[in-house]
Image (cartoon, rainbow, N blue to C red; front, side, top):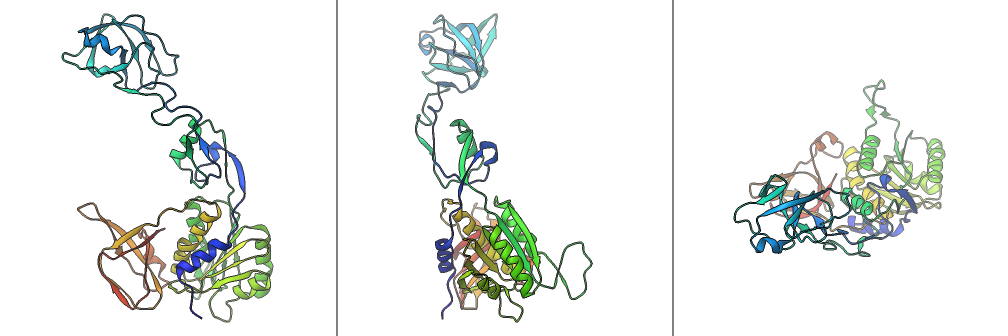
Length: 401
């Protein structure tokens, strides 16, 4: 039977994921969360004719009539209620952000006036126009305008917009409960004594780091030996207590690759096993009776890193209801030959040329165990199956770490 393509694997994962529940959080706790409601403008923005520069507010017609010296009637700071201009021969000192005083229709910057003896003198030849240096009421948005929609990831700008709309609490997707699980008798924790035939447990740290960098923080960690009894007991616990399990190792064809067998014995329905890709071909995905999703990744470090970026992170984003952006695409900086009839994930470094164009410089690894080659890379591109040589300038989909 033909293996799934990466695109077909994407579709199956998205189809089987359960959308996470909604929770209401204080605004200060919402950075990086995914919005699950619409936010509308509380009032016009700006909510008043807003002074855009420090200076003096005045009525422009008086300047057109030749008046160049204006008596300073008062000073109005940001946060003050708007004053009223008493005389057309007068002006009011104003600060950036304050409402435009009543009776005024423009602002002359402080750099273009000289203040002496309680008067402001305008620079010779200065032209003054109505509404200059005034941010007019409602020119950004009108009251009731939808500012943000469900599925928006809340970054600094979006948090500011929600605050300006008066939202003390926001309805967002809840954080998934994640379990990162590595399997293997050979794995030894950093800092512990190690024998020549053993290797450090590094994949779990890489997976957790990728999750945290993308805004996921409820992460449990576990290491299970290649033992069917232990795997059954520990995986049963994690399936009952977590929304998503991300495993590393134990999914290939070896005698001790027990993960698929144990998962299916625990009632986890296999949606697919193996994808036509390199690295990461043995990828396994299934859904438990509890609704928990299981993404079991190959144990080779490069395979793990690529599959987390290519499948796990997009799957978690989809489960939060996040709006899917148009995939990034980039051109190769040099030719690349793909030999196997499999989609090929090629690590790259992003480079800018003298004309400001960004290119993907290939940085291939020495096999799927060569994770040290990933240092300094920005991500990878997905190249179509071979055998074929893709020339410089070939445009491929980009996945950033």
